[in-house]
Length: 165
Image (cartoon, rainbow, N blue to C red; front, side, top):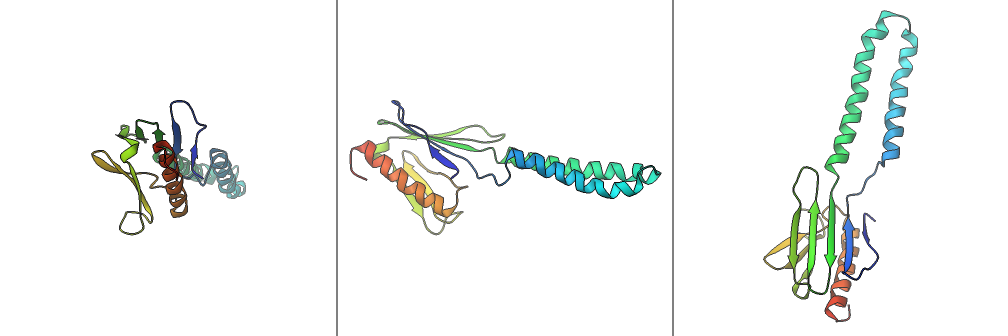
């Protein structure tokens, strides 16, 4: 799952959430290398002729465009949400590419975890309500992962409040 509860610490529980990556960095290198090799195969027929020099800039530009697009995708997906849950405070911090860090805090005793089955921007939209505003959490997760996260958040909040889940 693209989220994990870090080992419990004396200062509270920590949860990290991040978008799913279907192409890891190692796969990225293999994909770009394989694409370059396959694009180079037709060049074998024109080695030693002026046609090679006419085609080469376009093939290099194609590989560079693929590289740039995948790198851009990685930068845009570099999102991390961190939830810190202590006895006195719950803090959600969202940091992403080119954006300032956004932070939300509330007293965990008054925080409600709400899953909106319909009407949200994504199915099973998950929000934390408490304090002066409502914030979303894990919008990049799948609906099943949001349902699982909802149950885990409810249990952790209930444990911090001293009530059974």
